[in-house]
Image (cartoon, rainbow, N blue to C red; front, side, top):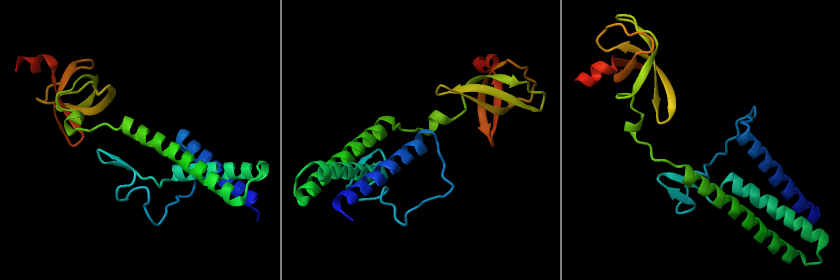
Length: 194
């Protein structure tokens, strides 16, 4: 195996697995196998990577390693084929190019994680106090359905009247309590009189 073959192999592995990884994430491509390594290099590490609010991205992650391989292999292959440099200089330049490619991918991913990270508060996801409309009428002592909005997302839940009285479809209600997957609601008019 010559140096150019080695570099070309590294490029093919890095580039093809990067493309496969991209399509697996972009179009939710699922492989029939579940591949797991016996260690968790992307999850742990003392002082390596970006940590903010509990999120951690290791310097040594699959995307950065694949970018390193692709850039290292591509640069090394081009240098061995089209430049008249000594093999050690080609190797040094290829390593520098690979580190640069891996660093660029790492920086992109760390910014992506940092920009999309939002602190979740339990209170933000409580149903109590949400205003909604009855979508399936609630008979006396029975169950129906209520639709409400929470953080810009339309949600629905099974619903019962808090006092057992019937509620017609389209009635504006407030969720007074939420227990075991069931919302207990009151008419908005009654809620405002309290």
